[in-house]
Image 1 (cartoon, helix red, strand yellow):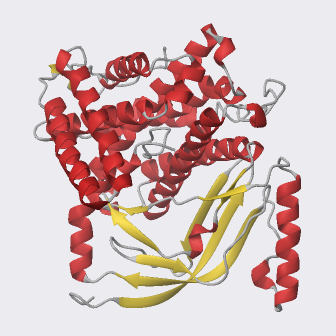
Image 2 (tube, each protein chain N blue to C red; image 1 turned 180 degrees about the horizontal axis):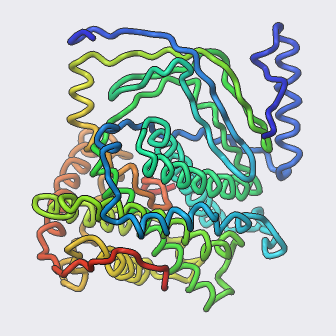
Length: 98
Length: 374
């Protein structure tokens, strides 16, 4: 990992999207055990995955991981906490007027 | 599991793919209302944390309580609750007052996104962790959140709002939170969520004429899931006394102030919603803060003094400053910039004012577990 250079790697992954009444969820699981670190960016390749209402779609895809540089990772570790309030649920969006 | 066999990505030519897309959207719209579906892209955020630190959690000091809670969650008391039955009255969305409709849809979308994001976060922790106690907990919480999201999604579909889950093929960045911040924020979020839902539920029990949508009837059992999630985080914090002592008490005060303050501001931005419920947002805030403070005494050694006259004044200042920041941004130009900058400073001052109100201290009980009692 370079100090300021980004590395790009590809990883096979399984994408599961559930658009059912019982469960609304979506997950990406890397099949080769790679892990994502602070500041990394991930993009699943291929067309948008659609799950019609009532369906669970599971697809094998390839993901591109844009690895953060050492500096970016450090920065994300230092500043990520500032956004931690996002984890709180407030029932409404932050828009002042709709 | 109902795995779809055909997908646009499997198609080799464009015509086939388009035909399938069309067929899929037909299914989607015929089963919903006749209203043209408004498409809302769900945009959850993605997080990482220090998974080694999380794996190092040892729940042995609270083992008996922990096992009892996990058993309760495994028994899945709300398994049959999130089903539409005869209590789900017809909602006449077309006749709903437009201001209320807007605010209520904002409520549903925000709640759905929050449940969905919770599910993504919990699932990630489940997957990356190796400590069985912890991964089991996060798996169970992810199950509940996905179920809640599905239930809200259905209410949205009735309102003609389709949730688009296409965000996965967009580039997304993983941000980072320290584990302890995740505990403070999610613990408070689950407990205040419980207090918010149960307060509305009890209010509507007494005033059913204000129940403008059937989803509120589901809040009682629903909020028990939030309550249990909060209990789990309380036990996690109990297992490591450092998390609730020393300098961390200042963090706890920060999170309490930020969560209460944000709730106050956001609720006051949705007047039509609260008017339709017959709820005064100031009364509601006070009720919710009082209940949340009572609950958080289980683990936090301090509570905020919301009876201090500075509290209400500070909340009002924060709310006014926030409204003016938005006004300034909307207006744009140099004048707008000046208004929003000035009011950002005012908001920061108001927050500092709230933060510096002396807290109430109390002794944390030896046993952490509570049962929902409101």
